[in-house]
Image (cartoon, rainbow, N blue to C red; front, side, top):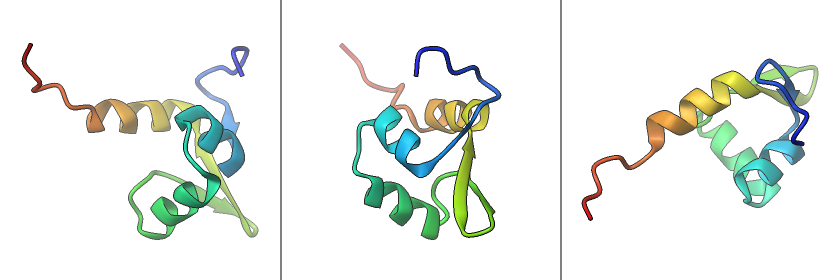
Length: 65
């Protein structure tokens, strides 16, 4: 996955591996419209650059040390 560029479209399986969560977690997030995705036929796809932006917006940056 290291060769994947930011404009790559990812499958639910690839996103699950990327986020280190179960594939069903990705399906749940998609159906709840909590993760950016689009459907091609009956399969979900995720644009890597949009997913990375979404992840950055979800980060807890208010933690203090």
